[in-house]
Amino acid sequence: MPATRIQALAAVASAAVALPALATAADTPSVVPAWAFPGNTPPAVPAQPLDEHQVLHLPGSRVTFTRGQIADLFSTPDWYPESHPPMPEIVAHGRKPTVPACGYCHLPDGQGRPENAPLAGLPAAYIVAQVEDMRSGARRSAWQGPHAPNDLMHALAKDATSAEVAAAADYFSRLRLTRRTEVIETASVPIMRESRWVYLLADGAGTEPLGERIIEVPVDSGRHELRDAAAPYRAYVPAGSIARGKLLVESGDGDPAVACATCHGADLRGVGLIPPLAGRSPSYLVRQLLAFRTGARASPPGQPMAVVATKLDERDMIAAAAYAAASNPAKPQQYLYVLRLVPRLHDDKAWTEADNAAVSRHFQHLKAATAAGRVILAGRTTESGDKTMGLVIFEAADDAEARRFMESDPSVIAGVMTATLHPYAVALQRAPRN
Image (cartoon, rainbow, N blue to C red; front, side, top):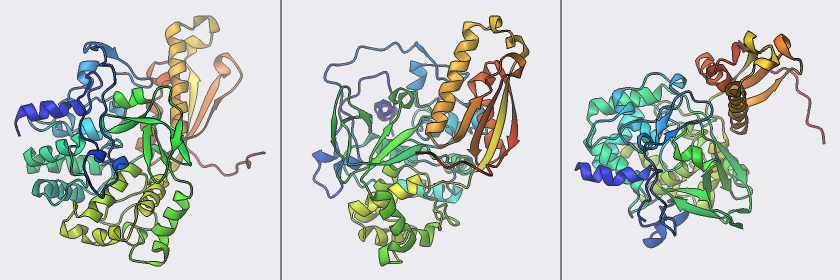
């Protein structure tokens, strides 16, 4: 594929460039619902050019990037390099001029974003097979109009070598998915706008009926635009979706052939080469069910799913996706880390503005992790000086992930506090009081 095509598709993720409008699902007659494929609506007034040399920061990260680097498809913005193993070259930088970095869209830890696929924890052989299906045309998007995330992935699949695909698949398969999307049942949602193939909150707008849709949005659009792998998301689904989804997953609502658990496992964590579904983006899951229903995904191994999808209406697809997204992708373990002030800060007069800023970032970091469901409890003693102690009780898949989370604490990064990690288990917990 010519480099100019990649340059055109680079607009998918550029937060610094006003993007041209592409067709949305409503522009093409189809059985595929428009809401599942948000497009890119440019602002009514063109944005002022932004400085590509502007240095950008994220709370909880010790690295910085310029706005131009954030927009570079051949350089994965890695805000938390300590949170994952070293990336292979194809994941970190791709191969110019036609194979963008895998980690740019799917993120360094494989968590993905609502407009693309979460790859972390998928079997390596499954990832390889999907790329081969994209290359052959056996896996396509249900939406037949222009859609930059799909266009880019299919172009990449044609140009990537087998060795590159194998290296990326091996890397992503070794990572663990973290559930980042909070699923909320509701009858109405804030009015949204479509921007760069995701939904964002419309400025100063009211609410509108949700209807039979899933609307998945970043909680903080700024973090989303900076490709923050720790950014949380929120998915609005119709009332009753999770209970309906549980029924479909466990029993197929009376049709065992439809029960997701039959193939994907009772906990939806996958069986062999059958992929895990738990904790994955509900927007992504619905798009795949639509692809199976329309025949856009037509490989022989996927035929059982095609049969299932033809039996599901949109309401059932939404319900199954909502239940899967709300499920834990792995049985988490509990940990506790203890924070203590470094000795120089035992004297209140020794605190600097930088020290206070680090503690502020520490609080925001834990607040975001609590909203994402990772932190169970966080607090500190009310004593001062060398008696000050902080506690963070949280969940992680294993010791390595727990240590990475602790070491990503902004207060630890800044050298304001020291931290020690301990395995932990909540034995008793008081019930919430009315």
